[in-house]
Length: 409
Image (cartoon, rainbow, N blue to C red):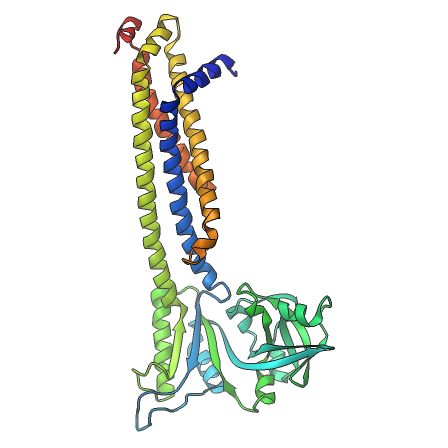
């Protein structure tokens, strides 16, 4: 049952000993404040790494070509390496067990027009698997499919912003859009987490573009995703093997780094994972150190508080107070101060992170925040430490005879 007299005594004690209460609260507030900021910054760095590649599959591999820089097998340097449909088929068949999705691309710049509106966009000719490599989300209609490739149909899938800019409030689905003088039917509208640039893209079937824009089987790029069951080392080995076989196919020197470039996200992911792991451990060690310092601080203060109140305890016992009631007053006071101070530290930490959010973005820290559960757990640990630190000396002091307590200096 709620004892109003008990709480009145507690608040009177806090008010009477403001310096002591402020010191106790400051120790907890500072510990939780620093704890919140440290873990918030760590989460901000992780958010930056996550958002940097949100528009592509995390297990993606990108294959691009250029000119040879070294002579090899009697062939001169400076040869232009051109990817073709046969190379796409070679990779798909040779590495069937190691790949999840595979897509080829041809890039074009076109002028789109619909009614009285006109704008320039990037056109990318693809095959169906590109949807999964690029992580495109179809909002309405469908994506490019296999029948489109086989029939070389004049259809396109447009980004959400293309629809907004060209069709205003109309739905683009089923409408015809003119791309550099040729009419195509819009069969789908997609969105992409990569941002505005990704949603200003128009996709069409690869075979259609190859026939209309060049009448050839040239490819600008081949993208794929490796088997998601691979660990980092397996994925890296796969990328190296892929590069080795492509260089052999095109008669490129093994140490020529420009003719065929295989960018494997696994290598990047492994480096990021190692860095974030080390950062996480470092932040955890610093955070736990801060927490331990807070525990030591609140414990020392509680021991001092009990010692300081020995005479008061003697008076209470002389007036008939039970040991249990004496311990309760000290512990409730400790828990109250620690809880309020911890909450203030949480608010200050969250507020500082929110205030510094814009500045921190320039240092590649995105949306720094911390789990409330984590901070509340840290506060509960401090409360537990303060309670334990206060309970032991309070229990000992409550057993002292009143006459001994009253003589205490």
